[in-house]
Image 1 (cartoon, rainbow, N blue to C red):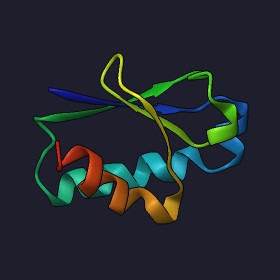
Image 2: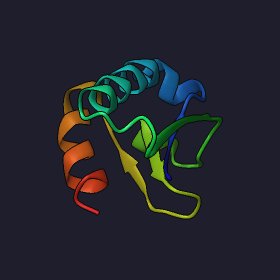
Image 3: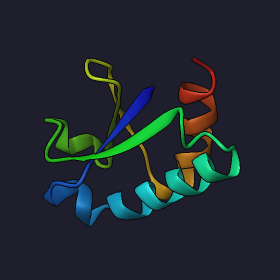
Image 4: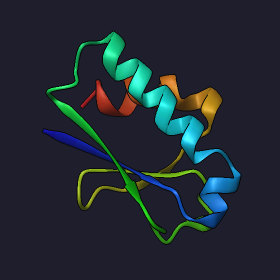
Amino acid sequence: MKKIYVCIGSACHLKGSYKVIHKLQEIIQKEKLEDRIQINASFCLGECTKAVSVRLDEEGPIYSVQEDTVEQFFYDYIMGR
């Protein structure tokens, strides 16, 4: 199962982490991938300047994702893997 960690710490919260989470949930449902992808809220991923910080799996790189870039991020980095 692929895991997506979305930071919900202060900086990311203020920059829209919950909107990013909701958009990811919508895409996962649309693609019928609920049994293959899990979204996890995470406190501070250590990259506050990249808010909203998103990491794939346990040790993956940290990406900066915004509500308007979630879809491209999903298809480029999650589906493209």
